[in-house]
Length: 332
Image (cartoon, rainbow, N blue to C red; front, top):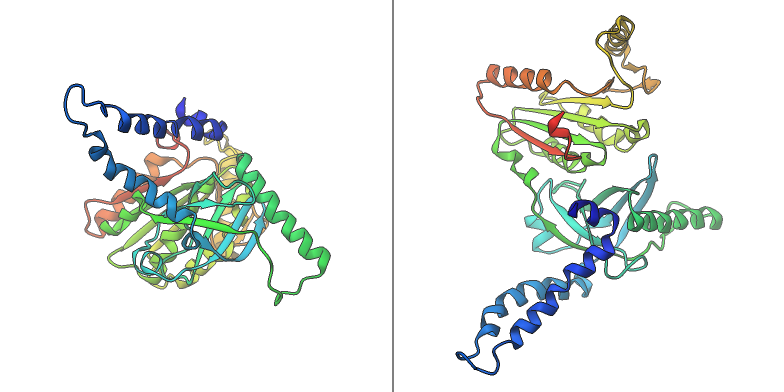
């Protein structure tokens, strides 16, 4: 219920949770009369107050502001934002693939900060985010940048002209569980819909520095076919750079149901695979693509059993599984 409230009524969620500050201030005042014992509550609260207010203060300084280099509206209501990577310890030395950061667009709301995963890797000289329009704040941000693009077209901007993008503020980077992929020689990366974003960051980093990774299995499930247009060039670059054959990339279009009891669908499945193997033609996309689009949901028992067997062939007993998407995915 609280997760649903946070997603559908974020402003109410944000306001009620910040009533905690009122309680803390009252707690500081409590006991000042020294009725029972000497007043000391303020000494216990100094450290928590510092830890809370210092990041909030830094949010309002120039250190949180990043220049927008490029912004694109992609099919399926996905906004791509590339920001100029700031100099400093955090973004030059401490950033890792799979991290996330809080984003604020003052023209939309000065108070709202929302977490989004990086799709750029530590090797990139920019900071990149992708996010879909799924709530009132993201809808307003999409509309703001879409209006900017429409204004560019009306004014006849050239590619070399500098675009006056809206101001964007960023707090981060912040660690996430997907950073643990470096601890395993065999990894499984699962992204559902826009949940692909941390996995894109990890894949980009593995192309530059595979480390001890011997095999990476990547699964991306989408309901909307337009989502497959979000990262085609990035995935093609990964395919071309994978000279050591580390990656196994699988795409699934879950809105197209697959029934293994239907002989027609079974024959179509094998025909699609044969066509793609012959000339890279994907019948779902209607064009050539390095990665074939499969229909229906993955059979996770079958897929993970295959991963386990391949890990054993490589001489490893453990593999890491990293998932980003709806809570119900692990129960499929």
